[in-house]
Length: 81
Length: 158
Image (cartoon, rainbow over all chains, first blue to last red; front, top):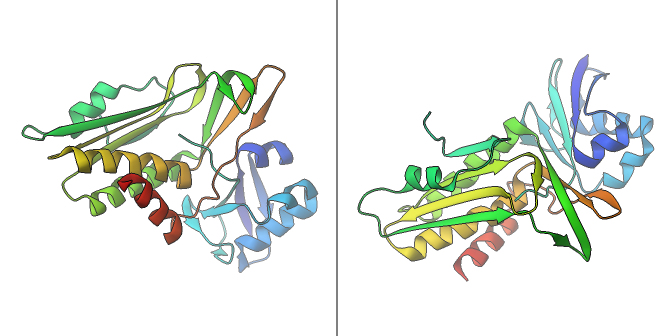
């Protein structure tokens, strides 16, 4: 199945894109999507313990299930304000 | 156009509009906070900042914070607008207005809101300084982290 991945700030810089379509096995989790990204961009690994994840623009856990067509966002520590 | 209570916008922020939105006749206090682009950071001379947001989630997070503040200080009404895009030194990146019957709740609700923004709103700033640029990274956003909520509350009530 296909999911849309969104990356922000330095994660976007490390991957060279802020939005990409990824093919992942059905009944994957956000963690599995992340692991797949890290295989392609090993530099992302340093964020393993520091990312937040959202599924369809709602905060979620890395163990959350993802489904066909979902938007899965990975976010580095925030710095608004 | 009516001012919404929460917003993420590339337009300059208007504190007066937020005050007008939250202030009710008969209230005793309105507190506003504006976060400005500082000309220095960690020993570097800052030239400008660029803010990026995950907009739909940033809107939800701002709304969540305003709701939390309302729960903690039921008499308070809070509005918060965050700006994104390129901001020059001295420009406001965020404006918060909190109104209440008494100053204590208005100050506390306002302070709580900015502390929570820094914890959980998916917005990032890239600092362009004399000699380079760098993404700034603060808190790992987790809206359900009760410890973070408690910390924001303690700061607000200090």
